[in-house]
Length: 376
Image (cartoon, rainbow, N blue to C red; front, side):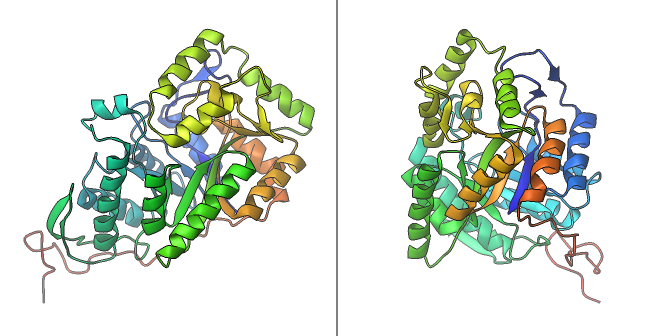
């Protein structure tokens, strides 16, 4: 298993939906989290993207110098940036980090936020843009010079002069629960991600994606995004989970759910469905709790239980084909340590390797006319 944590640039605290126990996610605090994640042996960390958080590329760059092994899963946003610029950003980060970049491809799911960024395409059209973006990004990142005339993106002589450390390029991660998203994942990505749905729903997605990727002569790896609430006993864990929402009011829930309902993200709507009928238990599958999704967009479920129970539930997902777990907990600093101390010894972990990449370092001097390496 590859276990990644989460860098909470959109805010952190002890409780959901409340300023009680809230923390400023300034650089010193984010450094503490990154150093803890790095020291404990997490494979890496996800940095969120969107207008509700600090820019992931800037934050990731600020955290490079205080970490040694952990990888950074950072978003590229087709439609917000051209593929050539995204490839240069990724290559630079990958080289400067010693090959520690993972790339998260995000199409966006909130039409209101997207309109604020000047993006007005509908859901399926955005994924068509992602398809063209990745055709170009993959080819130039692998060293090709590309001419491309698509329906949305046009480039002439596009190329990447200075390559990334990882070849042919850093791993591509991608999530989406619609047919349009499935089609893009099957053609382009390395790791297909799902939010934390019940195992039977995850199994269905994995089966679909394996068949679609095979039609392109490809194989995929799979990952899942979850929160975790782990304590030495199951009863303690459930008490802690319930405390997370102690300050959440019906008014707060109604306001949050109204925002989520405007999303055209199929994955977000599947999260909303898990909490739509709150007269039932928020435990939507054994030890899978949907309470986080009452007020939080995106990943809305948590594994709750003792170390043995949580490890067993993770192994159940692993048996379906999941090898990458992207986890988080509130507050993120303490919970990164709690999870590692209690659950790591129970899991078959793949630890992050020490950087051992032969990065491009120019022995040529300054590149002539921004185009050619000097001779002699």
